[in-house]
Image (cartoon, rainbow over all chains, first blue to last red; front, side):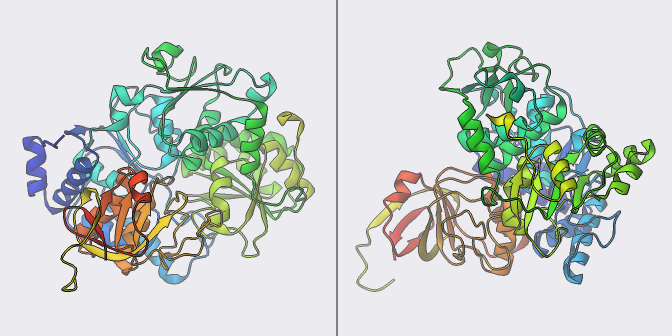
Length: 420
Length: 144
């Protein structure tokens, strides 16, 4: 297969819309060719993950696009940066990194992106419609966009997202195409207890199991309750995109492209069928904890990966029930949700209990957690996956209720009965 | 190339994703790794404590990855390694992966040193000889 560009795309690559768009078009075309795509496809929105500081190269790239007059051609939201702009001092960077992280965020704003600074743009008003072709970065946002909204995007690497936004194009490959969206693996959850399947804490574990088991494949999960609250689907996808590279999952009877199993599989026989057992789920749960078995010590709690929604904050408020937290408790969220809980009065209640709100960034991408290290408890499959390599903390996974109970008591308290 | 090496044995012929010539010691990753969260962009060392080769530096190696996984920010780590001159000499990917190769494509646009990226299935990677490898333009891999 060879890549064929339209006349308009060739003109972009030749500089008809300026040197920034030309560079973006060349990068898009080179990547499309490498993926074996025959053409590019027009996209209607983008979510850009390149605004998180990893080193000066990313700043040089974004500032070059901005200096050359680059401007996004479609509505584009921004993922987290490496700074909490609303709570200065929250991120403990040296002066060079702090300055470069700020320059990077400014460069993406100069390119015309919306300063949303959230990894849950879909809960900040950015919700493309079913069947819409978009170009998103950030693995959890990608899997939510495909699976829950039914819009279509590949997992774009950093830099390709902004190139797509500048050109309003993406390589026509993978999850943009019908044939790559059908489930080839069927996972049956009906052998698990009803209680487990209807519990919040099950969803990150199911996601972690799924990603580790199937990598980047598309699965249809049967035997699940319906409907499933959006925050649970968000947690499932984020975990599956951390332990593996899942970009799309179907839940039969729940997600938009899976009204029934035959539709989810495109009417074809699956290549693999897997029946989930309680032992498989327990093993996946245990892999989310890197702290030694039997650990009682807790040094901090982190929630909000993906960024906490208003509903999740409400649940946190209910679980706290006026009690005070005994260890640092970080809740990461976007500034849109922060405004909502500020207006409702919930923010004041939570901060009085000791909850520390982190906006615009999160605790596994920037140095926020205490230098002392130790044991971090979380209800997020994604935090559980990345916290140990990125922060040095050992992790313990638990439900939000477990996290609150442990943080109030000052030692690990988990309800084990759920997992039996 | 020494005068006596006129009969070089080609160890493998890979599909070219990004063309180029390179030479370096073969480093096989025994398990997949996400470059973001798994490779330190300032040192080029593997930092994921769960990875069996934790602590090993990938700079200057012909880095063979049977499979890739994890974060789409891995392209940013690849770009930073190239800017600092501590990236691998070449990448051999078990399956074509747009994330790491993207870091190299962007690096080329930014004027950083480019490296060849080749697609070579895991089974073929397993047959490569240990030691230094030389990669020629067009995708031929030979013992150096």
